[in-house]
Length: 447
Image (cartoon, rainbow, N blue to C red):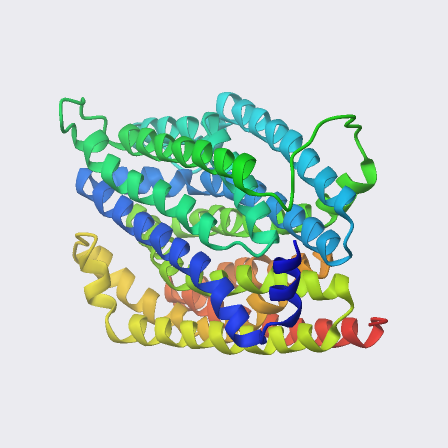
């Protein structure tokens, strides 16, 4: 524990941030690569298959929202307790996290069994797309426990400053998924060709494998945060601390699901190809946003620890460095999307109509990438400080309140291009609001 304290509390901020950001950046880049490769394989089945997976995305992202959002709450709780040298609360938080992760897994099984068909039925009347989408979503939801426990262990390791093992867990899951995708989708090595269902089977198999490895490593290697149920009693104060950050974070991460669902309803008036094109954007943009989010992941435990230790100066140094590094990543993403949109779309065997819609979509939306850095980093800062509601407000502005109503309005004026224009506009407004919120919070803070 002493070594972790020295690193989090005394090492120069920029080298510390880089060292803690590179592993999650690498793991997220691997995950983003998987998302792209997965979509490339599915696109080769048929355009209907790609549309089916796009319709299931909101439900699939809901798993990520709950598990990562809860993990962020747990991460912040553990890191602040470590900074305050409260070993008892640190270990109690881990025990509560283990139990609550099981509860979340059971809830998703129920969602997979009861709610998938009515949800998918709201967005398509095509029988083939409906069948493929329901099969994909049901499998991913009912076997989500692998992803849940993988992320539980990952956030514990990150809270103590160990970013390398989480990268290892993520890499195992993503690489295994990439290997299994063509085998399960197209029926290689003696396996039957399962199409879209095969993509789901490959996904959950990889997630369960990564989850088992992550939990074994946690139980054997994480000495700073031990899992001990001896004399365990539910402490609702700890549960409150976790969910005060976790629930807003989960809602924040689920925003893309709500956004995709709402925009799919708007885009359906244009064509199924419009839905598929937007589904591709969601996968492609992760290749830019995930590395930037890796910086935010590296930033959170540093800020949480120094908040617990009462070091305002190091907190602000961490924030400044995070904005610079994440901003540079988003700038490179903007250049790529502006310069090479045709090449990006061709990776997915895009036809003429997909190219017509997708190329301007990538160029227009990417104009908001750099300014989105402000909202993303300040949102992560609020999470680190235990201010989940502030973080949630920023995300609602970025991904719902502005985009959805303006898309419905602008598409009547400029057609489908009006939908894309709302993205950079929303990022600019949300960034301004985030700066105002953060300045007011720091002014009121007693630190």
